[in-house]
Every structure is written in C-alpha cells, then in structure tokens.
Image (cartoon, rainbow over all chains, first blue to last red; front, top):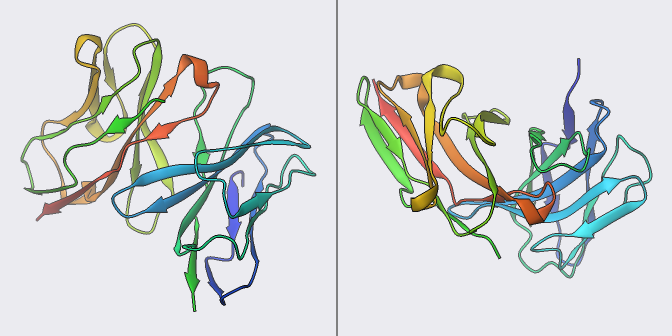
Length: 115
Length: 114
C-alpha cells in the first residue's frame, strides 16, 4: 500500500527538549517537504529536499533541522531554539523530476504540543 | 516573494447551495495553481490543478476552478454542495521560478449544514 507515513500522531515536548518527527514514503519520490500548519495561516514550508543528502531551508526554517540520508526518509527535528513549536506538521513528497508541475502528496500529519 | 490570499476564512452553507471560494496570488509570471482539501481527520489531498490550456478546470467530486490571469485569481466553485463537502480548502501556487515549491493560502473552512 503506497503512501506517506508520519509518526507519531501526537507528540509532547518539554521545555528545552529536542524532538524528532518521522516521515517515510514508499512512492519512490525524490523530493520531500516539511510544512507547518497553524490555524488561519495555511501551510508554511520549513525545509525541503530534492534529492538524497541535499536539503534547503524553506520560509520558516529557524529552530528546525532535517536530514536526508535515505530516499524514503526525511525526519524533522524541532529543536529547543524553536520558541513556538505547537502546531500540526505535515510531510509531503513529489516525483522530483525538477519540473514545476508536480503534485505533492501529503502524509497524515503529527500534532506537536508543548508541556 | 509570491503570496496567496484566501479572503474567506470561514464559510457556512446549507446543502444544495452554490459555493465559490476566492483565491488570489501575487506573482506576475507563469504559475501553476492547485486546490487542496483537508476533510476532518484525513490527509490533505489534491482537488484539482491548472497548468495550462483551458482556464476552466474540473476536479474530483464536482468541483471546478477558473483561472483568470488578468485578475490573478483561481476561484473554486461547486454548483450544489453536500454535507460531505465540509472540510478546509487550501489554494496553492507554484511560480515558474520557484522550482516545485508551493506557496499556500491561509485556508477556508467550509461547513455545510444538512
């Protein structure tokens, strides 16, 4: 069953703690993305990766880090430097052929809450 | 930088009413346009997209959207909504110079009363 999986569904973070959100895809897509969704603000791009071992900052990368060691995996770490981490985090992927007409496919999301 | 505006944040309709959700973008060059929908408890999924050609595009579940270049708009329409259309709708734009990155609007939350 092809698709994008994200875990966990809910994640709690204590002050000063780093947490890592998992994103896995078996669609054989090259490009992967992380978005943050806040009420009334839509989705904002945190980081994206066009290919393994390469990634770029999006519009709101401060306080976040990523890695792309495998094609199918693109974990996001929310560091203690991110002062307002409570949000819904969405991972997406696309074929990544370099064109502009690609559809992005989304995972179910992880809701991060700060204790 | 490109931006996308969805002016209706919340819309409440009765079943069988007609729907039009506004979407305006700020980029002046070639754009690719998308509408995504997020049903309660479900993944964000593609509703329809416009790349080129006929500016009136049809998507899933009876939705359609019209690209009006002169107005920088890509409004979503449905002639008769159903209770199952209750969801949040997002307009997204990809500008030709931005690779395959999308800029999303703030979303419109639609509630359809049975």
